[in-house]
Length: 352
Image 1 (cartoon, rainbow, N blue to C red):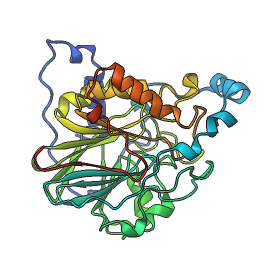
Image 2 (cartoon, one colour):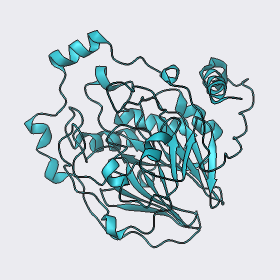
Image 3 (tube, rainbow, N blue to C red):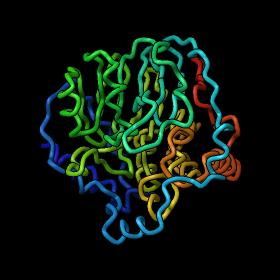
Image 4 (cartoon, helix red, strand yellow):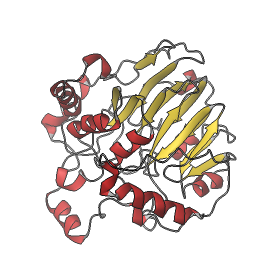
């Protein structure tokens, strides 16, 4: 089966309204892991994976007329109050699962004895965006050896060339379909591209690429030429982390939770959501992030994608206050909301 036909099958199956009914067929088994660094041929475009149309001329005109991409002075006044508490990385062993928030969507994951970076952005500034409003929470020189990197999509705040140049070129990279050539041009030698619902394994850790409500674009002419999504990492003992990447709210979360039951911790974006008419299709607001965690069936949530870059119009501290309120309103245990400061860590020990 070609990548194109695989993609169509997965998308059609997941969009079937019957899939969420009590009489739905059994959830398909997880895919067999694909070979690492496999070279593959992909479709030129993944436009068929969009769950909402990209903004058209009318939307662009409205945004030019009334859209705000930064909060006002009052919304920026709380920058000094943003939580920033860098600390040494926790000590771990092969039975420990630990996460450390470096800022935005960048995490240092320790699972099954591996150190994995998600969407690593250690730069002070990214293209088209004001400089960071909080420093990076983990000093690059304090990182242990990086065993792997996972990338959710190619937007500049998630795929940062200056940061990736710091890595040895033989570092294993797990990337969305169609993004491998970007890494090959930069001489990375172990790049594994995956379609939605596909997986690969590295030293006993399973990396599953799962759908997201988002899109991709890096230049004026490459919209949706590579895929976008999130990652489920599963340790040999069955514990699971879900890294959502960048996503709006929608049907995929229930589907992911059914295929990957027992998610211990979901790393969920909660920021860059205003104005809603412009961003609701591609960015969760805090209430939607909590709802997504419930759809996933995840036990815990760690918020991300806020307090680092000013990408939209909400006040800088608002995502935190709203996610705490939404978590409490949902009746969820307070200790299961890991609202970490930038630089903070959470640990699931071997007894979990």
